Length: 452
Ligand SMILES: Cc1cc2nc3c(=O)[nH]c(=O)nc-3n(C[C@H](O)[C@H](O)[C@H](O)COP(=O)(O)OP(=O)(O)OC[C@H]3O[C@@H](n4cnc5c(N)ncnc54)[C@H](O)[C@@H]3O)c2cc1C
Image (cartoon, rainbow, N blue to C red; front, side):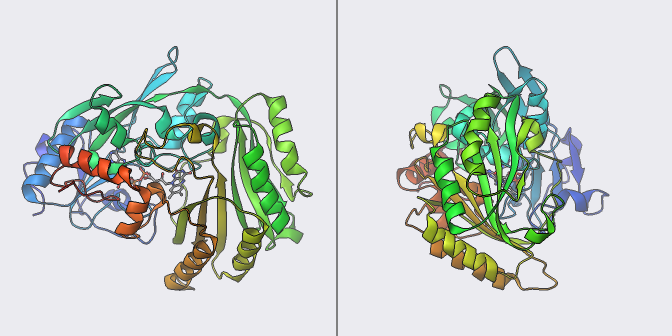
């Protein structure tokens, strides 16, 4: 047995084994390629449970996975035959509205957090998807709709509670165990199980937000990127170049033709927001203009995104001009996927004003993040064909920024993990790992082995 029978009676939370109803749902993660069957899923009730499960896994030698929202592109939130620490029951939200801070349970999703904070006209920036877990995205960095105005998610983390491999619950911040606090902000799940996080909240109430769909020509794509870079920090954009799907708000003549589908958030005064989005509307006659004043949480419609078969490659880049835009348009037309897209996020702003060595996320000066993705139907096409398409376009767009984003890494090998943590960041993370997890108990992640 890969876990001790003594474990169950001592947990406050719930244990799920293959015989239990709910087991299949609990082992399901977002990436549809992943179909692992853990021996046991421990839906922990708090740090004491976490410490007991860690001790048991160490004693029995069972593999240990840590699951928040289950969105790891590498499927790291579940394992085959081992134990999963499932944090989904840790959903506390203890707001100090006067101080604009909150202690949030690591099992919350970004969407649930945003809705809870939104009731007070406050927000912390996560990513673009409500069902992503706040634990996973925060430990990776967190690049989303408020990145230019309020920085990465980690730039708004004030403290964390973490159970380390020795079973100790540690409360860490910039003064208490500062090296561990540094490593948690970008270094992923390498250092322990985070049970609660304290965040800074910002007044973000009504934003100018929503979707703008433009015809995709090389000039429009390059112009969009240039305008997004020139825009005030209040404006963050996530633009997908893709063939227009048959959505109700896209007129039929546009279905299947190349468009820029941009989600945009201006977090500031409405009048200034209208002025900030005007240059984008002037790039071409919009296919659809759904930009409007809206409560910020409306940017996260619904919680449960469908599981999907996808091949994707995320990378940082210095720019997208008309030459790269031409390449993107050409390749998008060649993909046989159900949906092929090249997502472009313009970075900069508050994120870039934090020194690169202030946290374990080192890519502060990269101007763009690009994510090439193919979502496909495995009954009609082969994974390898989509992987080749994704890899090909990513290689063509590679302009020498070697960085990788840990949060969007699939199982891409050690070289890519090192690309996420370049140079001195790697050495420093390996040293922190040697202090807090010398036996590499937490290795089912984008792993930084302990310094020898
Ligand atoms: C559809 C989709 C959209 C995304 N959008 C964005 C985006 O806009 N911006 C962005 O920055 N990223 C984005 N990501 C990447 C995402 O932030 C990371 O994959 C993140 O790690 C997922 O967290 P999770 O808790 O949902 O996943 P899980 O699979 O549950 O966790 C991922 C890994 O993180 C670690 N982990 C999670 N929680 C804890 C914890 N409490 N303590 C210790 N370790 C933990 C574990 O190693 C775990 O294996 C997206 C991913 C997907 C699939």
